[in-house]
Length: 242
Ligand SMILES: C[S@@+](CC[C@H](N)C(=O)[O-])C[C@H]1O[C@@H](n2cnc3c(N)ncnc32)[C@H](O)[C@@H]1O
Image (cartoon, rainbow, N blue to C red; front, side, top):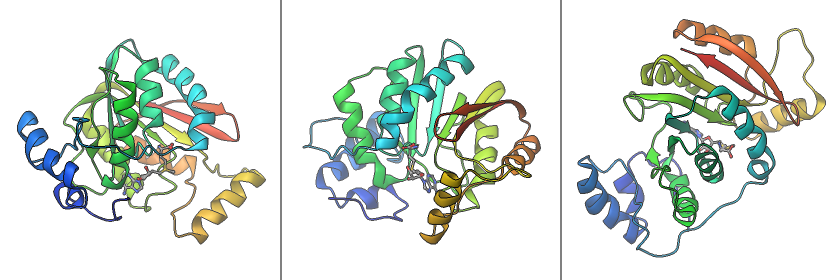
């Protein structure tokens, strides 16, 4: 069973799952002393659906290698748009000095929790419910923000919010890392990315973003651009430092 899209509140969302409803409403909320923003991570209430993304299987080792080069030895990393949860497990395992905090819309939490439970990694937190359009960032502070293949899916208004939230969470010296396909002014888009961008827009997603626009947004939020890493399949990692 899938959560219905567009639900804003984890309690409402989890009414669809009696087990998650109990955990979110009682156990986890009490344990964290919050209003129930954290999703259930107890692992005692039935089987959860683990989803797979082929793209994650392909790109995970390359992104991890780049992250190892970019990030220091330890800190707290917030991933925005964590999707299936595969990256969260791969990167938390590959960056053992880092506490890894996945965040996403509630419909993805079941899969993230399933991957997390199976992996049993001490440094991988339960997912936080977070929509980029939320007024507040998912946590007050962190040392790195990662966002993979999300800004071309999320509505256009989410892109400036990503830089706003990242800037609010990161102290000076913190790292912001974006992965995905991007457009570059004055350079023809590769045929594969042209077709991808068109198919995204036809399906109602926002589509690929211009690198130059991202740099301008980042500058406006106190970031300094560090490096553009070319990745397989015409993808890039864009690295900024606050
Ligand atoms: C193509 S998936 C990528 C997921 C994962 N990062 C990966 O690489 O497999 C796009 C992600 O964007 C997230 N997303 C879409 N709209 C969002 C929003 N408004 N706020 C936060 N995340 C959003 C989706 O929930 C989904 O996890």
